[in-house]
Amino acid sequence: MILVTGISGFLGRYVAQQLLAQGYEVVGVSRHSNDRIPKGVDYQSVDLADQAAVAALFERYDFKGVIHCAAKSSAWGTYQSFYSANVLATQHIVQACQKHGVDRLVHISSPSVYARLDHQLAVKETEPFSQPPLNHYIETKGKAEAIVKQSGLSYNILRPRALIGDGDTSVIPRLLQTEAKSGIPLFNQGQNLMDVTCIENAAYACLLALESESSGGIYNVTNGDPKPFIELMTLLFDHLGRSPRFKRLPYGLLINLARLMEKVYPARKEPPLTVYTLSTIAFSQTLDISALQEELGYHPLVTLEDKVGDYADWYRHFLS
Image (cartoon, rainbow, N blue to C red; front, side, top):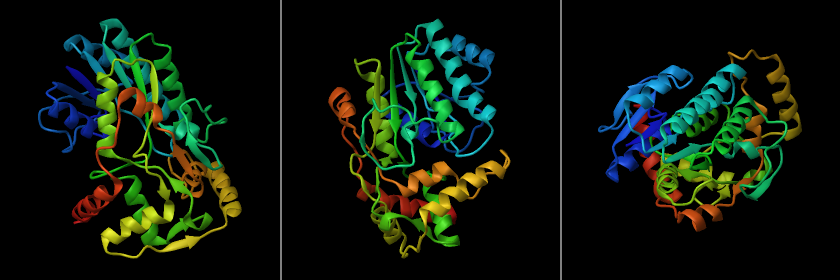
């Protein structure tokens, strides 16, 4: 029996579907249920920041493995909200795994730990974390990784980059909304390289990390096919039957504006632009996935070209 945390989220749902297809029994937890939880999952409502609730869950089931997808992954919010969702939740999962002798913990981290205001190509897992972290999300994801690494458990850590696919109501929709409102910001003539990961490939990497005999690994996850930002956007809009509007903007002005906004905006209200958001669209970031390929046998199951058309169809349905 496998526990999947964050079952109502984007990645958690696909991970559960992958496991069910392989014949696993799956228990899924999140704070709130929704219609995206796959049939066949034994769903439980659990706040992972509540240590007693997590302990009770592990007393109720005999978990052989845990895939910990749950996290607060927005670009803005209070430090305490990120700490509770990312650090405390991971600490409670780790403690329960230790007590009950869980065979394998797969922890979903983020390549945002590398994020900085500069171009980064073929980043390896050994790259030091950016200092200081660009936001609370990055800081708390780094702390959560440290808890897993020091746990003494059999674990693997995955850092999937820019998840896309049917059901994404965050990354691509926000870009589409920005395009409709004012045009997509364009830097470096749109030639900054972006690595993305089809959601099915990320779920497949989770299965490999769960079943692998290798332990203690940290793995970047992408499609292994970085493309210029402008090419990615044009491909998406072609499938939507539209021509994207781009807006060329001065980076120097925007970075100062983002820093100012972060100082004056309250934690409960996200600024229109943050330093982290700017880092993701103004600079190249590609990841080296050779460790994932060589140690876990990963190969992408779905190409970006295969997926974008399906996503466009899903998104039109989502809007209707």
